Image (cartoon, rainbow, N blue to C red; front, side):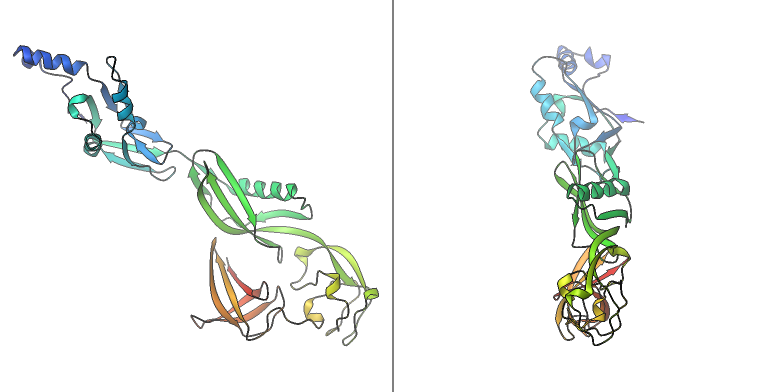
Length: 329
């Protein structure tokens, strides 16, 4: 690689011999600190500093403050982790002068271009899964077993002290646990995204101990509790003992089966005509809109909703009396 040397370090002997003044200038040049900028460098921080990409040598005592000042000169913002940026030698020299350092203070060698690469690391699906599993164990949620998770791609973050934080967004539904993941490096958030884990969720649910026909009332003696994998149960299974007592059966219930909410007379969670918040989740992005329910629905059921702004008709899952969710893969 060709280098340009805008320096008075090296002078032709003819000039040195021309006069006593020239000899003195040459002597001064040899005592200047020398700056050698490398053609390729690797940085770890958010800024590219002169000290990161160069070797600065002291030639005599008393130059320490000058050298430390040169090292701290900020040349540019660092590229993204594991990416490379090219700095022009002319720009580097100009930045040094703009920082208050004269070219006559130093001898220097600067290449035409400098390629700067920023250190980085890859965060994988395995790492995040391990964090989620450990979190569930530490919280005593042994009834929930993580099998897999939706993972669009690996994430590249800066090098440093990495922390992976996983936040559960509600309870599992149909075997899917919604979560928010934050990747923090040196206390700075590098990435944040929404996804879901596939889980086996074991829990106690009430079942009917005998066959019940339409129109019959459910008494406490009709109910017993069994442990099941909730992830394998159909949507709308009634999970609370109290929600069954005194309810009228609307369709035949077989003995030993969990009861679905649409098999008994339960007021809908969302009634037709109710204004609700529509939550859109797709590829880790969450957005909300206002909608109007066009049909009744229980929690976990799919209903028809109209987006009040766009007027589009959509299908959404009932989350609560105030919220429905639309999730695309």
